[in-house]
Length: 325
Ligand code: UT7
Image 1 (cartoon, rainbow, N blue to C red):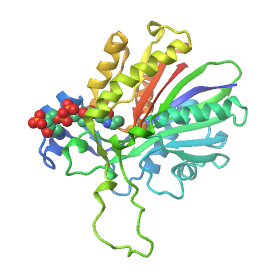
Image 2: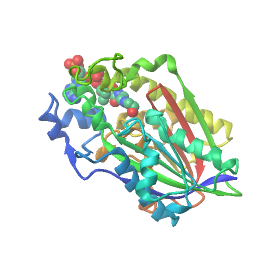
Image 3: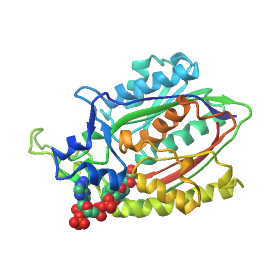
Image 4: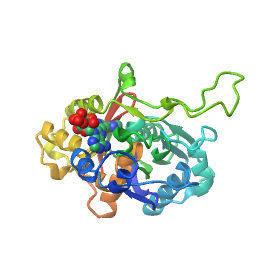
């Protein structure tokens, strides 16, 4: 058995902050952000708009697109680094919101590679015949983790969610390649907000700065432009597939310059590397499924097309999947 993507969906908060809005908060400007990242605007959750709520909206859209009811879903995996709660997990909240009463639900934190890990995990359950239908979601409210006084990070990230419904079918194809590099973890960090000394008062002081997203941007950039092409080449070699056979490379949207550099390293035209970072910024685990849904809704994906999905990020981690649409 193999999991076939039957439908996709996406949702982003309606509140939009353009680059000029950020220039009111930190010493930056529209020109710098556009040139160095490709980002023009990002969606930002409003108070009360939780990771689970936006995940549920993306999930409902994916179910509708797939023509599958919430009751038919056996498994929900939410990839997120920015859950609203640690307990219950976001997937259980989504289950409750959409009425997927028969599903087994858990979260997975794989940072920006999260959606690839979620897809692999769902595929493993479906391939084993344990479940028939799975809903996977990448959802982030990164605006909660960003330090809005730090121009090196706050201009990059945005909020959003993307989802896919997988159905187990007899005949199909799926291949993947993932790697983790824990020794490089300090390059991209965000400490837990739940660390207190035993017995410390609840109201003991300001938020620890370590609990905001910190990044050595240059190091992450170098890591991304070297490891992503490597992973893609490794996967294609393993699957004896030429890069020219791939219709679209759907890469994690972290920086338009990273996507361009990966295309160049693979020796391929940029038109096979769709981008929507302009509209969303970096939405971490949500960026790949949001882009996948955008292509699907635009009618650009035809059955039989070969797609590579690839991500990289905190951990550090990176990985790629090869699917036949
Ligand atoms: O999802 C995975 C996580 N993250 C990533 O993938 C991010 C990967 N890294 C990047 O995308 C880029 O490294 C950044 C966009 C974060 C930074 O771009 P950069 O081209 O590496 O810029 P830089 O950090 O080398 O800074 C260049 C200059 C510096 O000024 P000086 O020293 O040349 O005078 C910075 O102080 O730009 C300055 N700068 C800014 N200026 C205006 C840094 N941030 C800003 C800003 N606005 N927001």
